[in-house]
Image 1 (cartoon, rainbow, N blue to C red):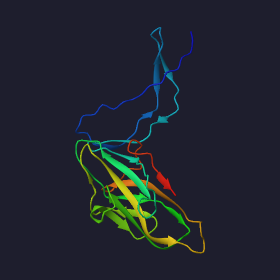
Image 2 (image 1 turned 90 degrees about the vertical axis):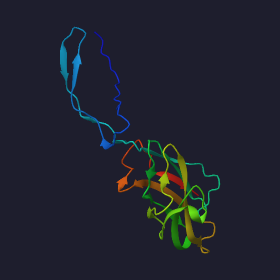
Image 3 (image 1 turned 45 degrees about the vertical axis):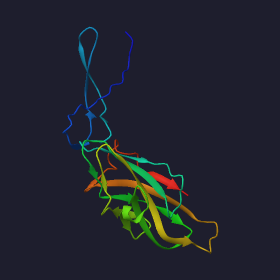
Image 4 (image 1 turned 180 degrees about the vertical axis):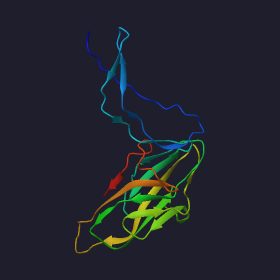
Length: 195
């Protein structure tokens, strides 16, 4: 008799009204049935899956193309898709930025679809942190919208000519009080753009 190995996948089949977060599968034992009909209890090391969310209002976050990349007008672009049957209301984003060679007081701003004043979703007077959304925070069911992060209020440090550097990093998208960073089926965080 020859040894064989096999890979098995577990797929959740849920109805359209299921909402559950923190879903994880843990394999703690296995029972192997031989071709002669005998069962063998196998010793199994515990195997745990990644954490997932199953929700009628699932969102998907992805990095968007950023052809006009500038710190003050389009530092980072990302999309949010409401993949479920209802709209998604975002409460904010968490940004972890590294900015060097600039002076001034930074203001982080996040806009929906364009950087026009009426599209402002939220702002924070800091270089990095949580930007709470107070407007333009809804993504309708089945739609994808683009959010644009800008950093205003900074100027190049004249004592460091040519040494300006930055990276803007999205580490979480918040829906109500729920952090989506813990769920592997929402996004591959962090989402980063560099100068």
